[in-house]
Image (cartoon, rainbow, N blue to C red):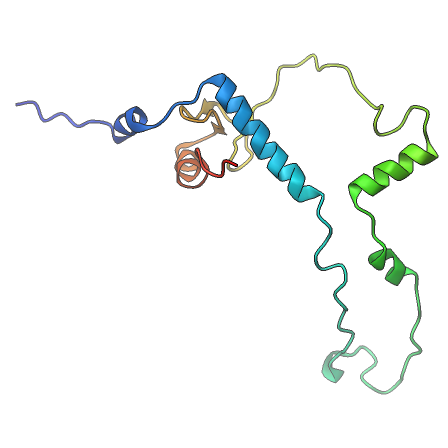
Length: 154
């Protein structure tokens, strides 16, 4: 009788679904599209009024001298804030000829692509067998498998 211990990680790998490169790229594209869709929303807190009440014990003037309120243009900056798409359109109207944001580009890098951990952002040497995400250590692998691996697909 051979009571050899087996690696739990190897048994788990055999049960996991492994994606090919094309599926990984499609999944990554879907995730990026979902993030981009989130980026273009208006700020939900933009129209909330600010509370200007101060407690007397924390007032710098200690309640003795009343200051005149100063009006600034900050109110209009907060109220009429533009999103990224609006800023791009405005720039296109003001500067139709290059260089501008849309026409700016750089040549390809001479150095190889740097790979970073999908969990913590440190440089990574390892790749998830199932989904192809990068991780740097066993702790990040466990976090990835618990929270990110083959989840959140649209």
